[in-house]
Length: 512
Ligand code: AMP
Ligand code: MG
Image (tube, rainbow, N blue to C red; front, side, top):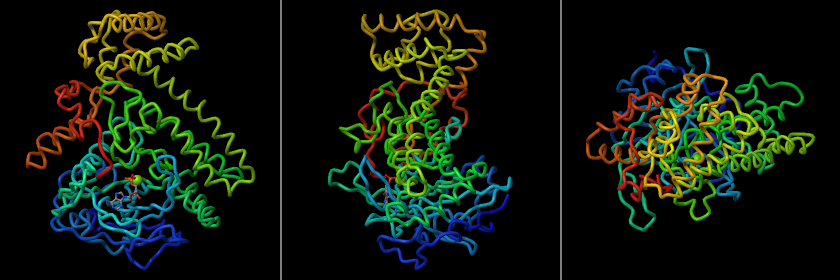
């Protein structure tokens, strides 16, 4: 295990591509540049609030000493680091937004892991960069705690994601208008150290295409493929790569559907080319099942990023990505053909995933109609998604009462009939399984989380922590590590009524 402060960092991205090396943090556009060298802005008194031991072990990084803490807070960099903010563009809420870039994230360098691989270490909330566009480059404790815990929670759920190594409070205040109502307040600031093999997004490619910097675009594509997709080679490699990114994106969307995750801001600058969940903002798990739920107040009334729309948006975003790659391929139609295959890929993964959730041995033709009927039932009756699937695994025979604890409002007679009808169909189907009941239940156990990091829990942990009580935060850090076991059953309850309308517990603004 090496202390961060004594590690030797590599800087292959900055070594390989042109960047703005002036160090000037003045917000501006940076044509011709893929990044800007930017040093984190020091903070008053960094204090370690959380440290991910298992990620640290994977990276071979020792528990932080005082010097390391200064790095995590952005007060110190080491000689081998070449900190930079990446330049990228994006389509936000369906519209081209032009240059965006890391406005408050700074990559310190690439850390070599004991297994020989590399991980980028990035500080989020570490001060202004040329891409801050007039904002302060900072992050508040509430959003940083959410990102820290949720990225680790998603990892333990088995969902591809960027990770978080540390959460540090800065001792500085950050001004935020949380409700966008003209009454900004000072909030405590914080910094998360994020970790991923790469933070490259669709937007890193879109910016080069938009600026018609085709040579750099080609170089970035070549570099990304050879470094992160080493199995892809040959004349058709861009098409094969696009197909792989599409597959990973479809798979990620299915994983979000499996655990009931809604990202909330699926702009193309928040889409990882590695197929990772990236940029945790106003996200939420579903409490009560509602396919049209969006946690992001900025996403109203259109609900572009609602739970059930995520798969389609994934394809729309891949369309933007394909547009950026088009100048590099002889036949742009070949990209279109791959893109058109998205639905087939998505549904194949989706039905396989649903077979796991429902404990089916396989997906038969008839199952497809049943699964759609099943989802319609959930959407009509709004049970708590997580609790409902847990109760399903322990159902012996169809019974409405068995599911009583999963509903937020008691079912009326019609609703009971709907539930009974679908459960009866389910029961008949499950009895035709070619696997035994134990095997079917095992499948369900691995597919259905029993503990999810609900927004109200996060919000409570934040409020307690801001009042000096870290007990709930500590409990949640443990609970996220075993989401499929019953070890955390003190949290196996529905969202309480008080949390339904409370800010941060259901819906959130982007103010972070
Ligand atoms: P997001 O929707 O959080 O992914 O952010 C969209 C863009 O706004 C990205 O370029 C961010 O870097 C930038 N951004 C968000 N918050 C801030 C902030 N407080 N300071 C500077 N840039 C920010
Ligand atoms: Mg972002």
